[in-house]
Amino acid sequence: MFNNAGIPGDNEVRVTHATKDFKRVFDVNVLGGFLGAKYAARVMVLFKKGCILFTASLASKISIGLTKSLSVQLGEHGIRVNCISPNGIVTPAFHKVIGNFDKKKGEEMFAVSAVLKGTVLDPEDFAHAALNLASNEAKFISGVNLPVDGAYSVSNQSWRMGFAALSE
Image (cartoon, rainbow, N blue to C red; front, side, top):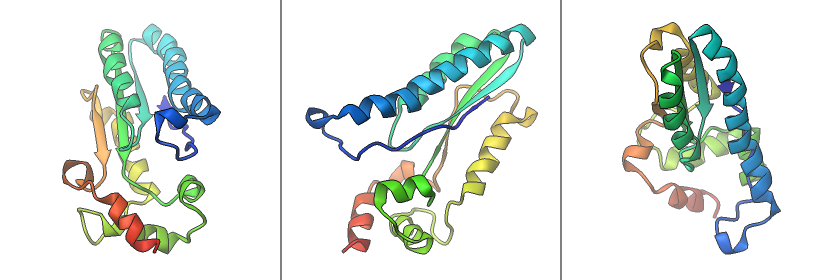
């Protein structure tokens, strides 16, 4: 079961200015993932096997905590639970948050602050990671957050400078 639904919020990061949009984002991104896992687990427990996979974000650790908790709880039933945290991918959701940039400009924005130079994260790269974690080749991998980010989360936190430089 792949929990891949997610929506962006209204870009307000200050808790003192949170809006109704917060609840909508929470309901889709967190509660939706939890409920998806709940109902998938009910079926998987009967068969004593399964795989639950979440999409998270490098900007958020919410699904990662849920992933770890569920991997412990459901492991006794042979169910693996993992998470993928991709770096920025130029998708329609990205356009909604940032504005209507063309694909090339969006890729340039991410490339400025990338650690792994000379390549761009494509939706297919994310799909390959998901297919691998969902396959029997990953039969003993559970409770993992797989960053698909070219080492960005390990060492580079300057993405804001890159975005600011390109949007001047």
